[in-house]
Image (tube, rainbow, N blue to C red):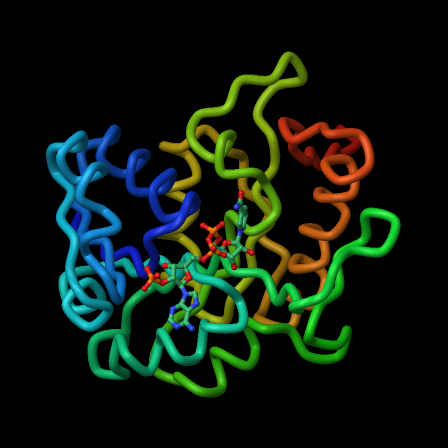
Length: 214
Ligand SMILES: NC(=O)c1ccc[n+]([C@@H]2O[C@H](COP(=O)([O-])OP(=O)(O)OC[C@H]3O[C@@H](n4cnc5c(N)ncnc54)[C@H](OP(=O)(O)O)[C@@H]3O)[C@@H](O)[C@H]2O)c1
């Protein structure tokens, strides 16, 4: 599979490493390809490009940029390069303000998530929320004594979600499909919950698991 990853940060690199590990081809998109020089040198199967070329390359696109820049990055990527493709949205709407007692501040409200904003701005792209509420160091094939952790996903397009489910299977996650785009109002704040242990107890290695009664 050809994957276009919009981003050059820790999440973009962790997911790029995962896709390469599982035999996919990756182009990472950034404003400054120089930032990725070392990563590209160390990862056969990865290339760096501008946002538009990365999005154009991908049969699947991953959005892994700062939440405040998400709309600008999608604009640079170009609507036609995103149309009809699954866009895995790993972003969080973290505001430019310090956490209070370990609780992050968001620039969105509980009545509209960042992913819904992105979906309305780019109606032909198939956004799927995923990989937003786990640390980048545990995104790919994490091992826990309690079994596979849960990746909460949501999005309006069932085919796009089926593709993300396949990727989750490869990356060692069990998928919990929480429904349409509105469910991102609940999935994005899982990042706040996840980060509290980090900020208050310096624990950054946990993951969520949904337990069902048999
Ligand atoms: N860090 C984690 O473990 C983690 C885990 C789950 C989810 N997330 C979420 O995943 C996303 C990426 O996180 P990250 O820690 O990898 O990196 P980050 O520092 O949040 O974002 C870096 C990326 O944002 C882009 N960016 C920043 N400002 C920009 C602007 N003004 N215009 C265009 N692009 C801009 C950068 O583009 P350039 O490449 O052009 O510089 C870079 O690719 C965030 O939304 C974060 O909340 C993070």
